[in-house]
Length: 157
Image (cartoon, rainbow, N blue to C red):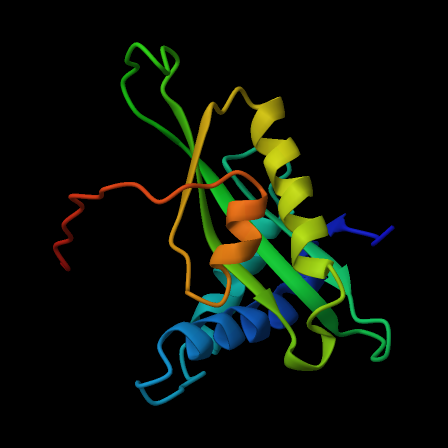
């Protein structure tokens, strides 16, 4: 069994490192930059310290590198006005799943995702959304995620 734990404020730098691993794998055509990490670090530490909020990150410690993380999953619970299939309006969103390149294919992301899905269930979430890379889609499909027609749009402010 893979030991999954909730990320702590002292994990913030590693959380950002693995977030960058995910960004680099999804947006491989854009130049990688970690310049934003220093500005983000205090916010990530603060959010990881909140234990009863709408954000959580679960991690797996790297078995071969003390102090490093092997895997990360992070998610939030958002509120939407309810509807027939979700009267309380709680929606989960997974926005960061990453495994260190030298720790892949060991079940770490699956174990962390299962822990995150349990956290969502405890909060009354009845639907969870995520964006899947082609490489990760088989994992998500095996957990029950299905593609949906998505008319999403975005405005950058």
